[in-house]
Length: 517
Image (tube, rainbow, N blue to C red; front, top):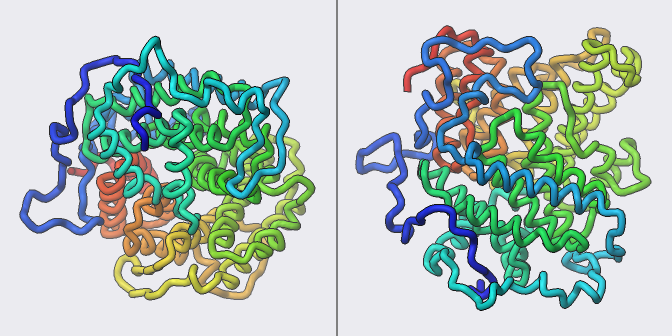
């Protein structure tokens, strides 16, 4: 990437001069033999996730549906409480809503091969597409060496998360090329990479990511009249950065701006080119996870009907997804079906517990439940060969189920997750042929076994909410210990904040005190 693409980020604090000076990652084992990935330990102590180190938390009756018991103690690195970060986060939120609510948007044409919207001529040569010059081009405070390290880390560590259901590797191959002429996207890439390094290495006072995040937002500000897919890609990267260390109850706030942007621009799961890749990245890593965090009280911010092209109904979804003959789209179909499960659970919960008149009567609920259950079983039986396991080893407490295709890992977990959600509220008068699929524990064991056998980073950090849903069903201490080790190792391997779910699981298991670490 050309250095001239980057201007000088605002200096807010002294930097570390080179990557060589960063602290060594904290590991669980100081022996010469490297541990396997599922034996890794997070650089953050489990105690960091507890406000009271001697007593289990109690849930407030009127608590926020997104409030995790561990959320109040999310203080392990200070990033999400930094005043500069909070101000920039609010600025980004305003930018997203300004883009979505613009009363005079530029006209939109059909996307070309890479999914780019047409930009009017008066903007196509605008200085907003060029690096800002403040009198004279100042040398970037971010050294070339460090920038290269962040780009290498983005390609090797971060992009695979984003491309997990995308065999075209849009975020790894296309986005860096587009970013060369679009500084906001460049800085967004560098920011999420820097943040991942900071999180993974347990760096508590290193804020390269904050300055890069702020610079990306500053570069977005002049672009409010443009409808360019590179803007959407940059916003999704910044959204993922925010969620990497966000408190559970803040997720919905992080997602609202992106959801509004997709809705206003008409971006959906069958958009073309880069827009399709960006949509499914947001849908899988952000919106669906947010719905699962709400524990049945909410569905996705972008309503499931907006995931399909205009004019298509829920009844058309199966044929629509099947018409795209690719393992990636079949995996995306699992994301969609899991979202439909969160929608059904949320509608029924609101109807029964809040008296909301949303039409989810017992008869209508039964019809929707059966239809969605049948769709899930069709998904499972129609999996292409790429989404089938190559080996299953029956072990205790969980089977190890190995896949070779990235999309197969998480999509199968989401199938099992959706089945658990439905089985937990299965209408009593429904009678189905006896099958292992009717037992929630069967699905729960497979969710855990898939994570244990498949150390792909993107699939690991996407597995936290499925592991939370599955983990609540287990009662034996050996199962609890295995799940705790798994969640700790995911944070150590990926840098993604996960250990707050351990606290939540201990509440579900009825543990009287905190586990030793």
